[in-house]
Length: 217
Image (cartoon, rainbow, N blue to C red):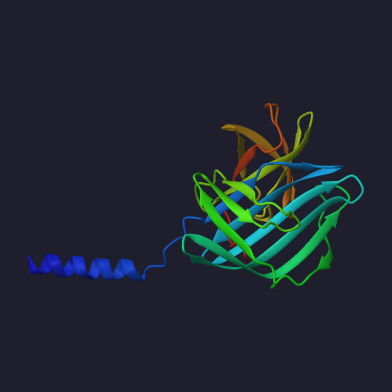
């Protein structure tokens, strides 16, 4: 009996010092936000006290831009306080080409918060957006699975976006709505896929790949 109590004591003591994974952790995506002459998607990845918040936007005049905000976060009173440290804007004329850094800006003064709302999180305010934005959790099920969101498609060719896309290795596999699709090419945070399945913007592609690095590396 004494041995059992001692074992339980050390078990609870051990569990109390294990870093607890925040319920917010993982990949989260917004719905498509359409505006005059374009649209945008948001993604945020949170893990082990760090975050990457990104915005992919298309504008007829500026073409494609990606804003990336990196930093750390704290959980207080059921909310997540995001503390940006590095903020950059990248651009390309054609989605699928390498991003080119066009601007870096100071962002340590920006105050961002996350709150939980059922199966979604709400980020407020958002970079470049006055209103709060809801994001849904991706379908990621393991450290070797990467979520990507469909941002455009034409005939059989799909263009998808994900912060984890650069970790896709040769021999990886991808599924859309539970059915296999072909990976054509991945460049930086975008990828090209081929599928005969019906697809629409905002669908999530799941890609299984042996990753060797963390997304924050």
